[in-house]
Structure formats: structure tokens, C-alpha cells
Image (tube, rainbow, N blue to C red):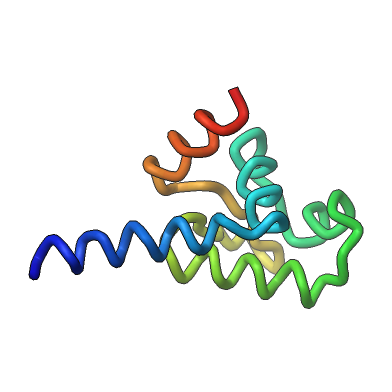
Length: 90
């Protein structure tokens, strides 16, 4: 039963990164930490859409946000995800 729980967690991470927008966000954040406005400009999507995707990635522990005054800068913190993205794009 423990193994199933471990696999469910890994499957949840894979589901979270399996969306094209989230994949693009992760790839971009691996190159450079960014705030929502910068990500929004790069993707040409509404801020609310970008924020929803960031929330999903944050809830799965894939990214984290660091607050600096009013600005939150995001970065990728999950090492498994970094390996997956590197394997996909190398």
C-alpha cells in the first residue's frame, strides 16, 4: 500500500507538468526566476490564467514563490521535475 501512495504522488506531479502552459512555465523558470507579470508577457496569456497554473505547480511542490515586497518571484524547486524537463528538452 505504501508503494501506491508513493506512485500517486509521482503521478500527480506528472499530471501537473503534462499541460503545455505549465510545461512552458517550468522550462522558463529553470532558466531564470520570474514574477507573474514577466511570465504573463512571455506567454501572452491573461494574468488570471498564469496565476491558476502557478497555483497548481505550487500546490504540487514543483515551484515556490519568494516574496520581495509586493513582488513574488518563482523558481523550480522539485529536483525530479528538473530531471524530467532536462530529459525532455536536451
